[in-house]
Image (cartoon, rainbow, N blue to C red; front, side, top):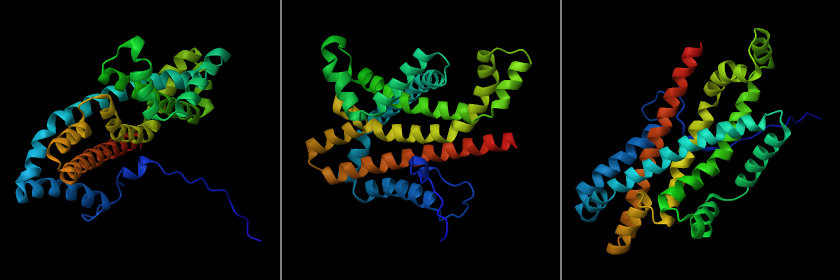
Length: 261
């Protein structure tokens, strides 16, 4: 009887990142990206009312989406680095706190965290919608980033740490000057995945009265009753943004791989 090997199947947002080996003009990424752009150009020309008006209504929402996404990814990276280091710490209490944070936050949906910080804690904190949104998304994705950092650090061969200590570096210095630089290169793809996922999840902040891309589309739809047209444009804009940044992540990854060769 043939032996069946265990195979780990992982499905993430990484599928959005285009394969650098795919050079065909008719690749899935090119067809999706340029097809979405073509529709955003053709629809306002073919039907100015309402598509042109919808597109004019969305730019400030796009800027707000970028603001929430970029600030959230920066804070989540900082929180993730601290959490990742805590997860590998030899100090039991630090390790336990970091582990509890990861398990608790990853076990609660982002939408619930948004409601909890803005509404449940709103009576004491009085946070503006955008601040609550950034805080919730940073805390949520910080837990996932922490696991990425932990896995990246632990993937570095132990000989690297031993060699650094052998030349006189402390454990902290070895992590800072030897381990982390190598870790950042290795974790770029999963961090890129999380950035893309965060960009899409930023649409949830519209429930907190944050005038992001989705909320601006909802506002136009609610006043014009053009729901199909409004959400079509919003979906196309999200698709263009997501595919564009996935391409940027793929280019960065390719350049890092070339430097490492």
